[in-house]
Structures are given as C-alpha cells and as structure tokens.
Length: 258
Image (tube, rainbow, N blue to C red; front, side, top):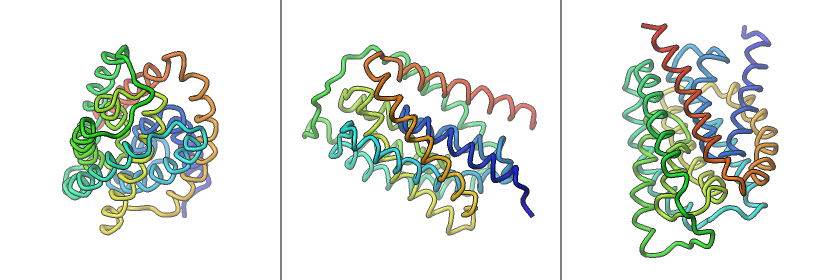
C-alpha cells in the first residue's frame, strides 16, 4: 500500500512543474523526471520517464490554455515545430526504452548544462515580436523540431529546454512568445512519448493524475508571473538557472549511485 507522503509529494512536485511550465514554458519538464525519482520516490527510471511524460503533456496543455488567453502563442510556428517533433519523439522514445535508466539520467544532466550555457550566450539576440510562419523559417522549424522531438522522446521529457532555443533560433521570436509557443510542442511530444512508454507498461496512471492536478494550479500562477517578467529579460536567466541547479543535483545523485 502506498503511503500518503507518496501522493502529497506527487501533488507538490506536479505543482512545481506546472508553475515552471507556466513561467518559462517547456523548461518545466526538465524538473519532472528528477522530481519523480528523487522526491516522489519512483524506483524505476523508465516508469518515472513514462509517467512524467504523460503528466508534463497534461500540465503543458493547461499552461498553453493560459498563454493562449494572453495571446502569447504563435500557433502556426508551434504546429510546424510540433508536427516534425512528434516523428522524432516516436523514434527517440523507442530507443530510450532499451537504454539503461541510470545512464539516461546522467546523460540528461550533461545535456542540460550545455543547453543552459547556450541559452545564456544567446540571451542578448534581437527579437522579432511580429514573426510569422514563412518559407524562410519553416524548414528551420522542421529541423529543430525533429531534433528536439528525438531528444524529448529519448529522455522522456517535454523537451522544452530544446524547444525554447529552437524556436528562438528559427524565428527570433521574443522569449515570452517562445514560452507560450513551446507548450504546443511540449504537449505533442509528451503525449507521443507517454503513449509509447504506456505500451510497455511504464506509466503509473494514478501518480500521473495527482501530478497533473497539482500542475494545473501551479501553471496558473506561473503564467501570471511570466507576463510580469516578460519585459525585464529575466525569463531567459531564470530558465538557465533552473537547468543548472537541476543538472547539478542529478549529477551529484548519479555520482552517489556509482
């Protein structure tokens, strides 16, 4: 029998992920897997990956609704990115299921550090608030989407830590628009990955439900704060900071497990 602490920690972890998803877009999904493993106490990394993929997809959709109301979503760009990424997510998740779980977590942490550094390096780039889908950026969105989707599926995450820089690199849209638009792809990637893992029995459905319930509340708060911080340039720095702290903790845990 699972104790109450398990469910409470699941709900609180979901709330934190939902808050970060609303605040910085898909980057919140970075927290889902380590929270499942190190806070909630899910023993199998593969179950943690499959369950978090489902929960993140649902929480991302809740955040997407909030950002859509705030009109910060570039829908056409997001849909092209998501469509290409779903193909990558299917292939990546199939490969990830056959990979050692602890090695997945270790590689995940290293990748997070690299992406966080790239985000800080490019944070000063000029943005285009009026970007639209065209023949120049559509191929870039497709390529970045395919790569982000493959990584998302392999690691069982929403992939926002790649989606955000991918959207910005392909279109130069402002961070606040990248945050909202990234949730289109995060939702699509998460559903694709979760469905693939569910076929192998790697999803804890009850835990996912609790995680999502907490995440819906957290996303409301995160979205409101994102709108206040969007004009200060702080979102990129917050995004990178979350990545570095989480990656450092995961590397430490991996070292202890050796």
